Structure formats: C-alpha cells, structure tokens
Picture 1 (tube, rainbow, N blue to C red):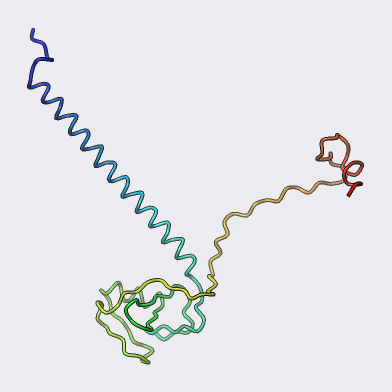
Picture 2 (cartoon, one colour):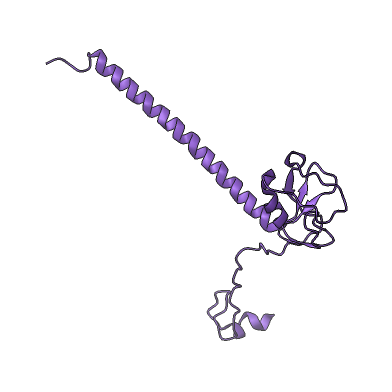
Length: 164
C-alpha cells in the first residue's frame, strides 16, 4: 500500500478544502457584521421615532394643510420651509408617489428629485411617547415592629427609631 502523505493529489485536495473553509468563515463574518450594523440602525431609528412622535404646535403641513402636525413631522433638506405630515410623506412614497400642495401658500415642486425629507423636531418639542423604561420598586418601608436594620436584633421602635 502506498502512503497518503506522499500523494500530491490528496495534499492538494486538502489544501483546497481548508482554503474553501477559510473563505466561508470570512464570508460568514462579513455577513454577521452587516446584520449587526442593520440591527443597530433599526434600533437607532425606532428610538429616534419615539422621540419625534407628537404634536408639532404651530406647524402646518404643506401637503394637506392640517394644523398642527400630529405624529411625525418631515422636513425637506433642500427647500427653505417645507414641512409635511406622516400621511403626506407616505403618499409621497420616497419620490414614487405624488406630492400634494393643499396649503397653496408656497410653490412646491412635484418633482421627487427636488425633495429630501427627514424626520424633524424643534427645540422644546415634547414627544407623546414616554420613554422612561420599566419602573423600579421602592424598598419596603420598615414598620415599628420590624427588626432594626442596624443588626442589633432589637425592634426598630426600641432601637434606631428612638434616636431619630
């Protein structure tokens, strides 16, 4: 029988297999990094949206004319004073839909290339969604007949409560 260690065809096949495994591992790592970045972006967007959802006092939607804008307020980066509500932004569909001019106080281009909307809030804006997180329970209040917290073994009313 011939030894497999000296056979060049077998050693080349083994090298090809390890090279393919390394390429797969590199591709897997790249995909995992992309997924982590996408999850972080989604979390950031959700967090941002809860801070931007509310009643925008004194702001009129240039699309449908509603006052005040309730919900998300979208502002155009390219236009000097162009705000739309969430409904008009959905109707606009990132340039694939239509842009209404219900307010008709200013000239608004209906060409999608002329607009670049982003979620906006003014200084002093108060969101409707509260983002405080879970509430923490307060420590139970000690009663006079409970053991004292100083470790003396006495009741609270006979120990530290009389000192206070």
